[in-house]
Image (cartoon, rainbow, N blue to C red; front, side, top):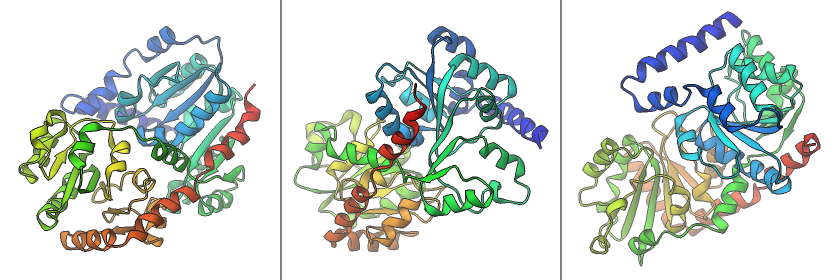
Length: 405
């Protein structure tokens, strides 16, 4: 099976090279890894110990950020190094102030893993939620570096729990300790002989509670929102926006803020075509304060935008899965999302608490919008759920601090 895994990594790298000829994300992925070990050697001292945090993307960074910041607050002299697999995480957080350095993760080969562990000289390693790499985990194990998974979540349909999944189960067995989100994950791991597991919940709750307690003010949004009820559509895709475009005419007393998941000119043009007369954040002027729709064409603002909202629509539910519902729910507002939410425990919990509704059509969207905006308890329930679920960060930190010299 190892040869097949190695071939898969090789083939993935080959596909990225081909896609980089015409795809900007693939180009970032490839260019960011050029001379990667030279980059690392120039920025960090291999003779010093580091705490290594790895994140697949930006969402996982936000998931692990609270633990990282807790460690840095308690051990300010510790040096932290970050890696990201995807450009969407690296490009936004490459200058993160609490890290000594931030890099792309080289592809998982035997050679790369050995070089990276030697260069980072990790005191311990923390991976968040997903991404289980054979060569990196083996190299950490052989170097006797403690490895932790935080906010882990597992489902029965994953390869680890299949009859043919022994190779992948062996990867998991190299982890020092798993901090998982729910009881199901713990039971699934126990069924394959992995018992170094604690149910800690999801660290994102701690992060979003802190964000909601002290959100960054955005004067343009405050001016646009003044004296109106606001719907924020976060991380939307075209399928989401086609449905959302039916709402402004039916709710002329509301204003709508559309935050596309991607903000290149092509995407902004698609959104603008669906919302004629919409203002754009980057060029917003006082004369546009009467616009009903505002399109956010800048990145890094979404979590603060929800403070102005009375309801949120979370995008991605017509693709591989919805984006972050907790950032909105933390502000005590109800949420709506598309049909592909089953992989997200928090979405199911919000539905069960009647703090959210899932929709598939424009008619269902209108019904959900009306129902949630007319029921003040839906938003209260969302806020209560988030507040009651915090605490994972302290639990995880108290468990791993004994590994810190």
